[in-house]
Image (tube, rainbow, N blue to C red; front, side, top):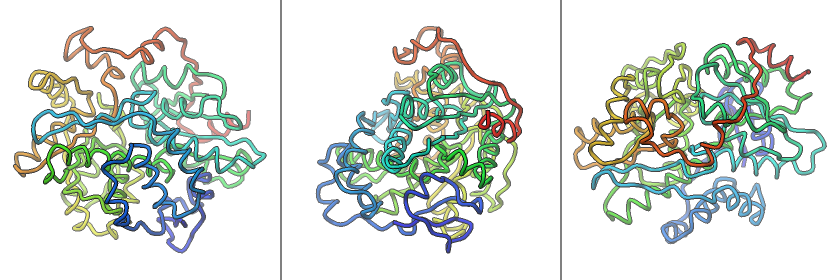
Length: 434
């Protein structure tokens, strides 16, 4: 399997280079040279496979022999050891719960797979690997958990000051050991820009053996495609004639790109609906064909506060930079905080279901979609456990009404350890050098 740069399709590298280096030197993003439909033999058995075996079959097809069979099976089975069930709200509307991993967020799928893949690819290397990652919410905690105490690896997490919830912050600032946190006096876009600047410094990147755990890293996206297949077969078990419309709360658009990968591998998907908060650069592009990145706006759905989504470049390549083709498969809708708060209360009142601010935006989009396409079956990606946003949940549903799992509650009393830095790449370089 070869990977090319979105800025230069003639620039191709192998799997290890794409995963460990994360970004091409030309500031593009790596894309697989080909994504082909899964063989008929897969479709004959896919609905009866365990979740881990389903993931292995997909990964084996995607990597095309780049990793020996037994090694790949071990990577997938060790990473994907928790479920992603769909929960019905109505006969035609479902929630895909992606928060059953160790850090209660969908990022666990990508982070755990990536940590094990990187460990495999670098097992014979002498140099320590430095994982540099920007987070707007859940990525940092998932990466910190996945790489904690992994030998030969250190992790540096950049997050926007005041831009993540208290419990999200505790997940990435309390582990210690090989995990360090930089609290940036700026936005997520600043954090992302600082990380990219370090990778584009070839000498620095080589000296510190830098790699990224953000969705700019192609290895993050593959395991996220697994749960699209898993959700689709759960829907078929309920209705043999149903074809899913996936409603995806979107920020950096890695989750939606992973869904597009699943579709390219042959999964029948009726439509994707990208649901955003006020950071609506992609919905606006889908409406008028103009892509205009903007400074990010802070909202209560903070993991989606991205004004310049990196994975949009991958989406463009998938659709051949054709606006009409993209908008045929992907629709976009955006909502503000007041609408989000109302949706949290409405979902609880209508269905007795507690949904987090990101999933609430997905529910709003699914309501509009189903009004327009009445025979659709929507699956809303619930990307994080609502307790990770306990202040918002308490405000909307009442204090003490949202259960906090013990693996999150136990962090509340721990001391935060983070270095505050200005939104300047030199701050990260100085930290690396020190």
